[in-house]
Amino acid sequence: MNEPTNAELDQALNVRAPALYRLGQYYAGEQPLAYLSPDARKAIGQRFDRIAVNLPRLAVSAIAERLRVAGFTDADGKRDPALWAAWVRSDLDQTSPSAHREALAVGESAAIVWARPDGKASVSIESGRQVAVYRDAGTHEVLAAVKRWTELRPDGTEGATRWVVYRPDRIEHLIGDGAQITAARVLKVVDNPLLAVPVVPLTNADRPLDTFGVSEFADLIPVVDAINKLTADMLTASEFGARPRRWATGLELAEEPRTDDDGNPVLDEDGEPVMDVLNPVGDNDRMMVNEAAEGKFGQLPGADLSGYQTAVDVLLQQASAVSGLPGHYLGLNTTVPASADAIRAAEAALTARAEARQAVFGRAWEQVGRLILAVEHGGEVTDYSPRVQWADPATRSAAQEADAVVKLHAAGIISTTEARTRLGIDNPDLGPTQAPAAGPTPATDSANVTEEAAA
Image (cartoon, rainbow, N blue to C red; front, side, top):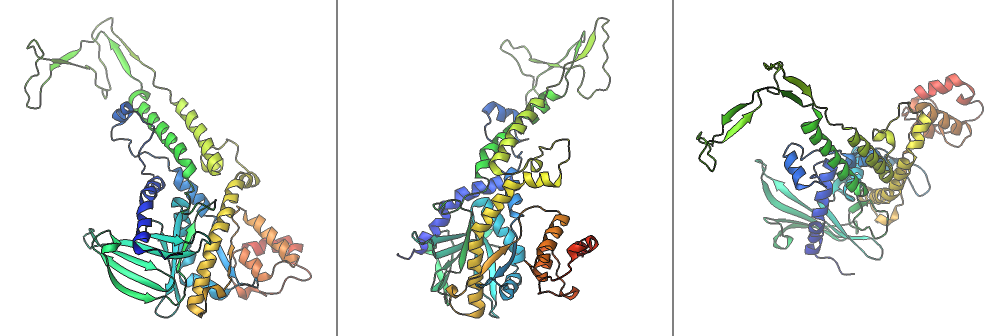
């Protein structure tokens, strides 16, 4: 296959820019209101044009917080402490969640692996707005990639545009004053000893042809637009009709001449001054006086807003069905507190989605692991076969987790080290760390189980 040109790589960023900008608006809750008639927009004015129920961010966060890389194993299934040390040294234990969020939000993020001056690996997390990759149509292997960004001057204005083009044999650094890579000049070209593109895309794809990934909240967008529209309608009704209106009979209405901007009276077709009728009782007046003996005061009922709540609840149920978000995430709670088992059952769909994303992103992190090992230990990238290990995405109480771990340890299925790791205990001085349990175990004493779980 022919190698893509720099212009083709740069164009890939331009093609996706509008879609990524729109998704970014929805993720930030800054999308414009939809489904509004011109009259409704006029009534709302500029007061509600940014109102948004930010379910897209919730849908992304609910899955991203369940995606936690717990470690790596080698080809023999043994833990790889060297790779995990490099992972932590590159701050990926802290920055990998942002890669997951970006990929879930806009469809794709990326990790770039390179070497530091001391020979250790360095990994940076990149946005799909700045990085694009070119894949082989047959093998889906990354053949080239580009990163583009604009420098900011100290005063906040935009400066030069920079590009870094990644290829299997070389890395090209370019700079230009405009947005066209064809007019940029080459700063330097660095040999790539890895013989592989050091850019790994994290693509949120469910189908083989989802080349650029799909946003996790793509199906939520029309539902969110409808919820925002109903919320705007409710606030508009609250502004104009929810507050009870007062009425009175027998009051003498006040009049004053209408004037223009210069203070001159406005005249009608007959040359007479136009008079404006004024309410003799101000909205903020605490006392109303009526001198007419037959005068009366009254109050009109305020608008009933319960219909809006019913409509919003229907749409929230649709959002739950589409996104897998449980009802207690969306405020659809009942008056009876849910038990722990009921919460786990309600989150089953969300947990399944997180497990599916683990499978999708796991391949990318394993490729990152290969590149890290190749940078730090030499050899070809294909010489290494790390396997990523994920933390359990399901919600469990501390007691349930401790009970399950103790039973697995008692049966000799997991070692003490693995048991401590699952319980979040990292203190090798507390006892033996390798051998599986034999003979009497903490499972025979409930007090020991509690003590172990609390350690």
